[in-house]
Image (cartoon, rainbow, N blue to C red; front, side, top):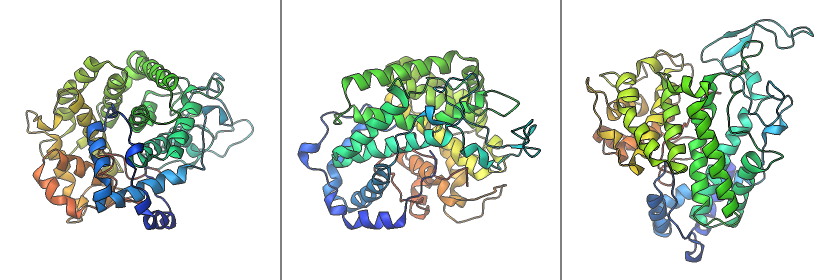
Amino acid sequence: MSGRPRAAALLAVVAASAALLVPSAHAAPAEVPRTAVLDGTRLQQTRARLDRDPRLRRALADLTARADGWLDQGPWTVVDKPRPAPGGDVHEYLSQAPYWWPTTAPTADNPWGCPYVQRDGRRNPEVDSGTDRQDAEKVFDATYDLALAWYYTGRRSYAEKAGRILRTWFLDPATRMNPDLDHAQFIPCRYDGRAIGIIDFAQSYTGVLDAQAILAAGAPGWTAHDRAATKQWNTDFLGWLRNSDFGRQEGAAANNHGTFYDMQLAALAYATGDTALARRTVLDARAQRIDPQIAADGGQPQELARTRSWHYSAFDLVAHTRLAAIGRHVGVNLWRHTGPDGQSLSKAVDYLLPAATGAAAWPHPELEFHRYAATDVVHAAADAGAPAARAALAKVEAPPGGDLWALRPAAEQLDSIAG
């Protein structure tokens, strides 16, 4: 998920009052969350240990710092963008291709400066204004942080804010987003939308699914109507992913786009009750994702060819490890899979360890190296029992805002491609 540094001053304030963060017994949610990526039972067990584990209390201070930062922001809506998506429906999500740039100065006759050309790894700053991309990322990040913070503290304000954000973006008729991505990553004067725009949601929307599941475990203000309406939105979105031309194209992608597509598909299937589809998707990932994407030495050739090779190597493994986490819920252990040439998730993580621990420089092109980008996938491998990853944990770098793995043990995108 997107990189989300928080103010150091805010962290200090929350850390100073960490003793106030331990939830009381009466605030405990009645149910184990039926999360798609996170392990709901593990969340419940972690919550029970908060009052006697100083390490968890420190992580909780970092988490509530994030959650507190969202309380006076949003809610956001797709109908607020200055121009609607092609076709004119303000409820349609719109984003712009990040690596495409105008070739001429805008004029009255050519307001976009067309034609556009691609510059891989170099983000056009205009994509962050005038579309829904940044607001969607705030929705994803805020609801995940707030739902988790409510679960661990029992504070009503966190749950109510998360619910308001979700209802505004997905449910309220005047402000809701249509459950499709027909106009994601459009290129001015070239394409009204593209299949690869599905990754706008694939990289983080599974966190929203888990936030919804956490709120459904007893959060104040999150009603039966909210639960039914979000399930219907997710069912409709899953149908679009499976049946649209864009969905089929993205599902056929051979790099990180395909991995994230499968991860999103499996999570949506599990969240909406189609466990057979979720299981089939995870099982198919062995031959369709792990074997062709990971080389015998653990490198990921398609990601290593990028100008942001470190970022994309870690990024693809975020999808792989989250898909493996979904597999736990449907009886599939992707960590045990070994391909015909020895390919495995553990070997792919091992490939990153010298750079992740600072023992060696990353030997491939990278426009902006952040060592902490790999921290979560190292955690995931260590949790799965990979010896080298376990040994490396003491040497990985905490991301900005603190290492939250103990509270939300599922890999996120920790660095920002916008940097």
